[in-house]
Image 1 (cartoon, helix red, strand yellow):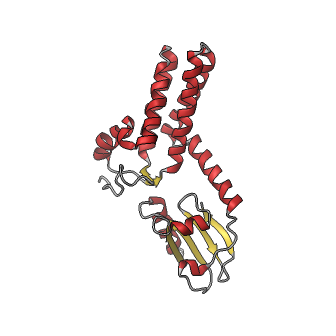
Image 2 (cartoon, rainbow, N blue to C red):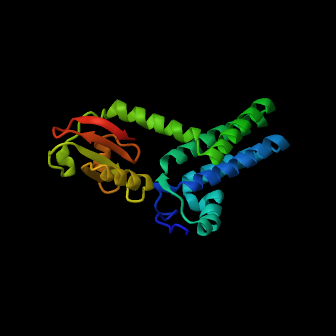
Image 3 (cartoon, rainbow, N blue to C red):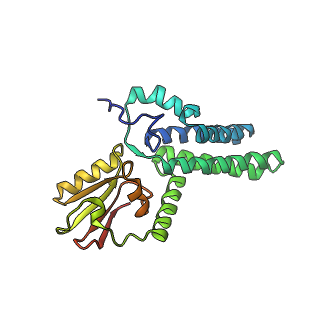
Length: 233
């Protein structure tokens, strides 16, 4: 049975069907590989331009996105919904490398241009086939480092979440359209944990205060507000 759409692909921009980036990566990977193998290096420039246009003006101007959301998703149903920031960052990296490949090809450095084109093709096809996205992981690592640097999450004020200090509490930062968030909360409750959820779309000030760069993020907190363990994120 097809899963009904829970997130509008053109309005709910902070989340995305997880299959959409993989469809986009498959498109980029195949075309980048074809560009290098055939010597039609201008394809790399067109890919860079298309990614840049989609990033700037939205998914309605991203041709692979339109193909997925208008042709593929209606037939397969919506996949798991995830945070859109990691794949967006991966696309930004793709614009830079594809643009660099096009530039050096134009200068006559075809070997370097081919190497950059093959790098994009290899990483994009790897992500499409396995779900291992190097750009997404780089975003998560950078976000984690920024969060640790500016907001060391070793203590929270339970009063911020309307939680009474009565034993250990799991504070989970979530989003209503995040599939992983729902699954994680369900698991915590099945384990008998006392869970307090914080919707970052409704409480962005708390996300900023505690340096939450990704959802789901969850921490176990003592009755005094001390963070005992980071459970997710």
